[in-house]
Length: 454
Ligand code: GUN
Ligand code: ZN
Image (cartoon, rainbow, N blue to C red; front, side, top):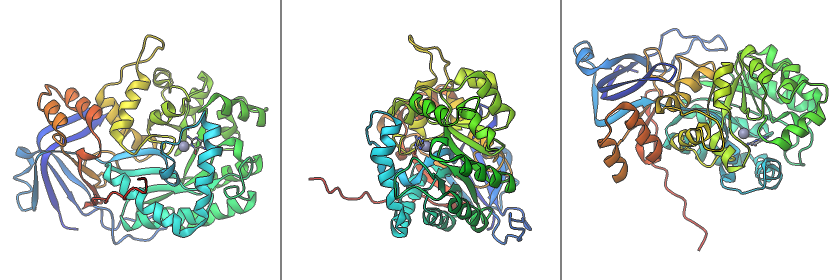
């Protein structure tokens, strides 16, 4: 790739919750380091393009006068969003109402996931899912697949074609799961190791060891997952914890010797760097201290928690404890792919109200949690989620005038916080004019499917 430059307003992060805005900026991208070595030890001929320089147009333009420059007048260049927890096989589960988590899993989620026994279905949903992520400006995701190895192959292959940085894994669930999604204890672990060897570190892909949650894995399966997590220390681990009070009660009954539900994962070696637990609502102070001690991250899923009535992530307690966390859609418990909607839901969830304590997150904190903060929580700081030199060239072209109301509101903004708040409250996929992945424009206009409902 030759060098390319993009002129426009710029948004990037200088520290946690600290955004920098450049009203007339220049973003210069070019070849990644030559001689880069991938996880398998092979020299990569196609290293991902990276940010070479970022700053004010006036300061940088003379140095890069020879570089072809695209001018995005009136647009904002910003890091691609990072979704820390999502389920690609639940794309069609969005909006399925249920009494609570456990009935939602049984009634809608497991039957949908059983369909991923068919590789053709996996491939079709993988394509739709990735296009939908990109349409909403999400360039990196840590996503569940299903218990079927073919569901992992399909998603990795589709992400590899798009040169995306994407992390996924085969779900391990060898008990308390219906036929069609339940796997075999040993075979599930054998399949996991084969998938790690096939995909982890290939191009921009990463593998996540994925026990669904403690109630649906036997101790033997969790032990095996922990052994794999130790044998492959730069893979990710992902699961769910403390989302719903009935789930917590069930986990405590199944693992009576553990200090807490979260401690079950620790007892099996599943808490370490690059381990990510979705929800983390019903925790105590010792659990939060354990997250910090083990350098394990929480994926905060506010739209899902509101939709399923699970509870509220305690931002104040998380800040006091000092563990890493970031934002996630949790589609299909979550209500959609839009990072704007997730940031707004996080604002509601965090907020102090007349019936609950809380804190007022700033728009810069919200945006950080869905970009550089999420990347940091995934162990990918300086790789994705920011536009600092050295970051991979995944960035968005935002249109702050994408709708009449957004145009009216952003035109009146007197500060960066006002501008970002307008986007968070009023923005959606229409504000994502383009999503660059590995330096290439990747957003296509997905034709809406026609409705069968008449
Ligand atoms: N806990 C176990 N499985 C799931 C899932 O698919 N979604 C959510 N939100 N929680 C879970
Ligand atoms: Zn989930």
